Length: 103
Image (cartoon, rainbow, N blue to C red; front, side, top):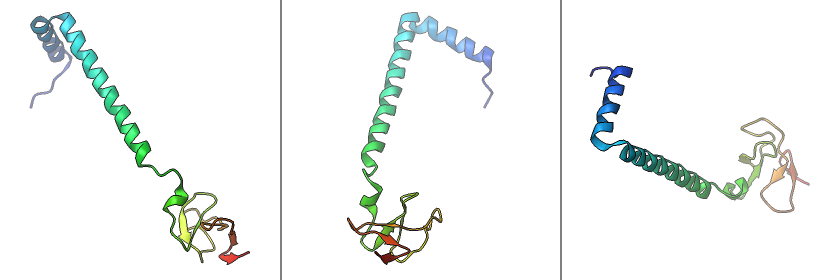
């Protein structure tokens, strides 16, 4: 397939201008830009809807939450599997553990 350089692209642009006219090309470009913008906005909305409101919502019973990186770890874990910091928070409301022991 031949490479399209600057002279070839300019020739294609001139032909498009002759065929469609300047106002129609501007209209097509504007519509294309709006379509891309709407697509990006829809993708952001889908990502926001798919993300959990809280990382704790994904934690199962018997697991603790790392206070530094919010990753799930076993309740008996003394250090976080992700970042290595000491474990201190559990999923159970009102109960705090240090090194896996209830306080």
